[in-house]
Length: 127
Image 1: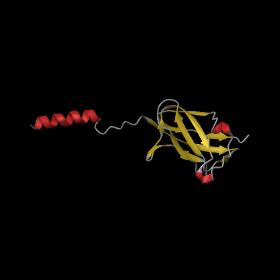
Image 2: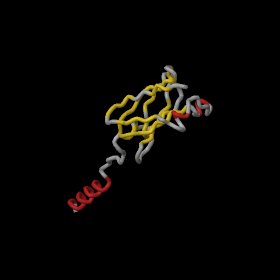
Image 3: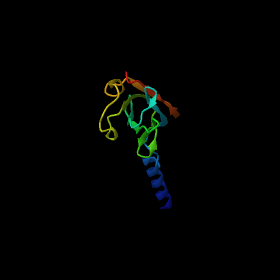
Image 4: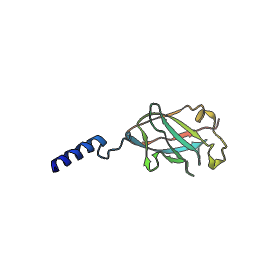
């Protein structure tokens, strides 16, 4: 009987992955967003993978710094190429956009996430 229970538990553990997460491999991502050389506070930075997968995002702080979050308490973004959108049309700014469309609705921004730590800065220009 004990051998049967052990076998069933082992098979169940294999079937569900023994608690192994189905989460993809992630790289941590941080950086600074500036506008015309000055830190851009309160901007939403969103990295969306070119293939399947979940976006990662963060709001910039007073110094223009961001650190992407994949899920609530999980830092990082999926590995590989991403389209990047940066917008100031957030609740914190009353929905007012100050950036040119090339950074959000017609974004020209992209980045590739590698394993480990990634620092990706965005020196934006208002013109």
